Length: 182
Image 1: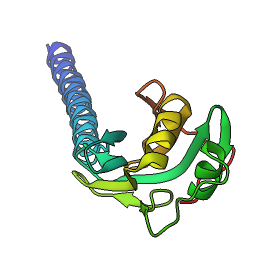
Image 2: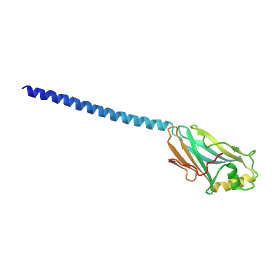
Image 3: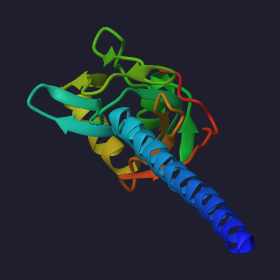
Image 4: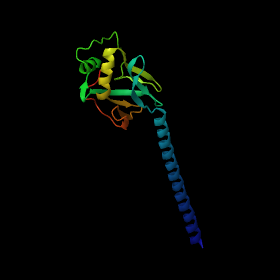
């Protein structure tokens, strides 16, 4: 009779061990699930969404950067092209559009974008040119051939590329062929 008691005790010890392992595995799975949920929540709290908008109004032409996301947009690379040709700065852009133009910095408003941070909800005027005969002609020329690509990242190092030609925001990275140094 002693043998069945020993087998019964051994059975309960093994069952208890298996139950403890099963509970531990379940707790581990719940912990991993919660960690992934927390990580997704953190990403959503610092998600940037950067866009460049051309704005034509009664005063003139402006290009505006807008961060419509929930977190800061860290701008890493900016590429500006005019009919496929990369440009280094606003001077090169204006010279390419209209060689010999008479637009000086006394008539333009320019703000920096490359290597800067736009906080959530921030709207920054990048370029403003008031209307006159020359600027209207230049604005018509810009509308057909100006494209902008921007790599921007969240503070968690998730990165996207905005392409003004398509309006797409694709995850990933890119390095401008020629950095636009505005």
